[in-house]
Image (cartoon, rainbow, N blue to C red):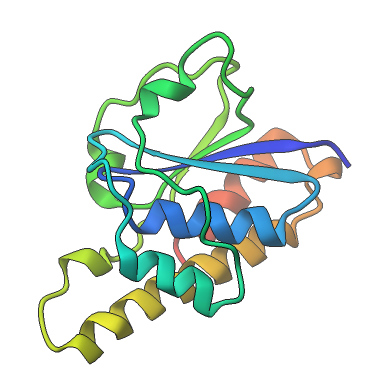
Length: 162
């Protein structure tokens, strides 16, 4: 099977895209390498996102909030896919990605925007993590190596609606 690099985008790169990166790097290894970035990175990763990653038994080490500009440089990893996981980033004009990777929008409600009790906030992070896990698992079940690009695009777009 070929190797695929995936970039998960969110505006702040502090929760959803970070969790997606962690999930894909665990579930998709060794055929997938995931990265995350933001259009307007906050500069910090939310502790609740890191706790969610750890609660799933994944490593929460080494994550940082970074700009999507890091992935537009000539020495950046060649991207196969770029997924927006927040509605704000999906509406923004994205950079031109080298190699013209396949893009899709997988909107996930922002757990960092939830106000309420600690239990309600925790539930929002768990739900976001579960949605990302489901979508990534569905993508990994696709026979990408044998599919034509139009069929891959159709399937990936449909996963974002689940």
